[in-house]
Length: 169
View 1 (spheres, rainbow, N blue to C red):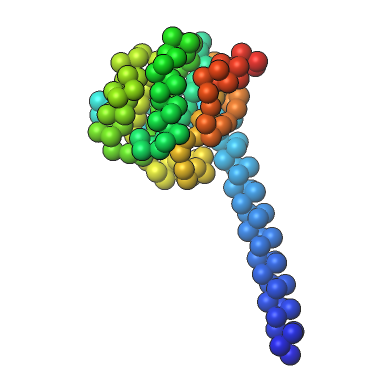
View 2: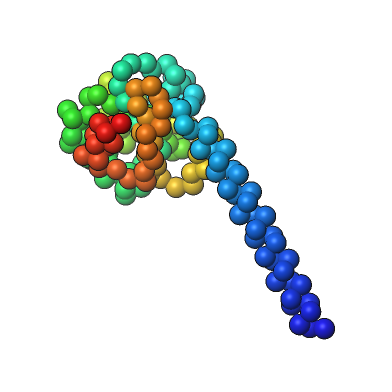
C-alpha cells in the first residue's frame, strides 16, 4: 500500500511539473512576442518628467537596458559606455531601473552619462518589468534596429559586441 501511495505521489508530481513547464513556455512565448518590436514603455526620467520610448524617433539603433545602480555588472557597463561614448553616438539608450530617481540620477552623473543626448535614464515600475520582460535581475540589454525590431538580448554586453550586433543586421 505504501508503494502505491508513493507511486501515485510521483505520478501527480510529474503531471504538475509538466503543466508548470508548459505554462512557463507559453508565458515566455507571449513575452517574446511583446518585445519583438520596441514596446511603448512609460518611465519617469531623472528630472521627474513622464516619458515614453515612443517619444524618441530617429535613424539610430535603440538599446534598452534594465539596470540597478548597485549591480556590479551594471556599473561595469556604465564605465564602458562612459569611456566609449564617442563610439556610441549612433545608438539611442534607454537605461531603466526600479531604483529611486535620486539613486538613478546619481548613477548617471557618476558615470558622466546624464549629460549625453543619446542616453535617457528613468525609473520604471517593477511589475511592468516582470510582466512584460519576465526579468528578475539586472542587467538585461535589448538591442533594436532603427525600425525598432529586436536584434538581440544579452545579460551583459561590451561596446564592441554592441556595435557588431547592430552592424551585422
